[in-house]
Length: 242
Image (cartoon, rainbow, N blue to C red; front, side, top):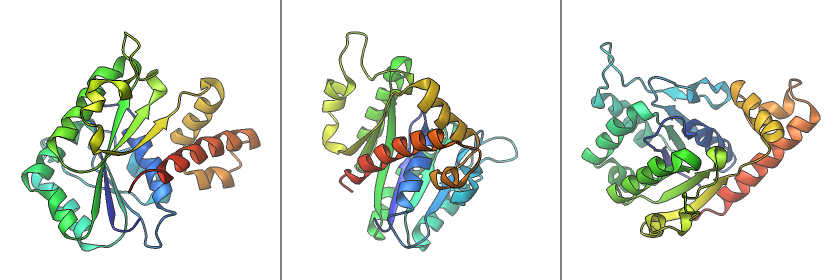
């Protein structure tokens, strides 16, 4: 994993984009000797940039009049192109359309690839009431680019199945675009009172796994459950065809 650029793209808010960014960033940090570079383009809820251990750079693309200036994405592209190493770009729902429009209009994916970068889009599909909107977002992203996709299946809102019981990855919606997917990562539905509460505590504190391990704010069982969750996620990321 060298000179890779990972865009976290999904138009629906509150679906777990920042969570995916933090998981991916922590996994990538152990894959290359060069420093990992992280960016947060969310203008309303720049949560990723609050993870101090990851040194996330906030990209200010909103003007004083609260409008998004697409040209401000230039600074992000220049950073991605001029320095070697792996990069993670988190994106909020409020900047999804402007960023995607900028990337496509300026042919940025090809530009990054021609400069020697491997580019991936990470898109999230959620279960329960979020399934329809996030599935449509997956299709839209798949059809608008030729960039390899990593599908994150977020079971936090419920299992990824329709009212008729059909699993998303067995649907025509997924199968029509499956050739674009180079890997899948499942954010499994776990016991909310134990695993869920511990991960929530970790996220509220904006802490990494390494910080949790060294912290006296987490007891031994909380640390163990967080270790189990991240071991599972990192093993899934190891199996992606990068």
